Each structure stands twice: as structure tokens, then as C-alpha cells.
Image: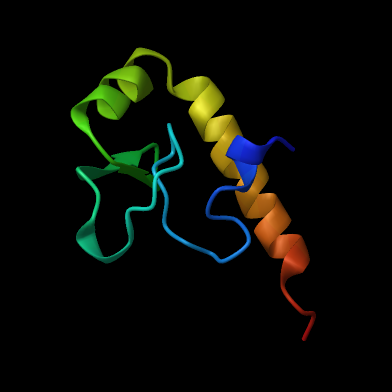
Length: 75
């Protein structure tokens, strides 16, 4: 996992799926539904990059979510 992949992961912070910028409390540009998954984007440039090729960004998001799930205490 690279440093970019950890942005938002440790503190469960909402982050832009493209660049990792914090978008908590309405700080993002857009929140879009991509195949049933809500994706945060911080600016028009990130939206353009995501729309061109969402694959790598969705893979990073899936990786972050899997690490978050592993970090959750078992009940």
C-alpha cells in the first residue's frame, strides 16, 4: 500500500477517490454513484480523471475499504 492509498484510511476520513484530498463536511466538489458505489471527488479535474478511467481509482477504493474492514474489531 502506498502513501496515496492510506489517505483517509487511518481515520476513516471521506476523501477524493482520485487524489485523496479530504472532502469531509461537504468539502468536495461532487459525490457520484458509480455502479452502486458512492464516490467522492474534490474538483472538476479529479472528476475528469475519474470519468476517463475509473478502474484504477475504484481499485484503490476497494483496497482501502478492505483494509478498513480488517481494522474493525470483531463482534
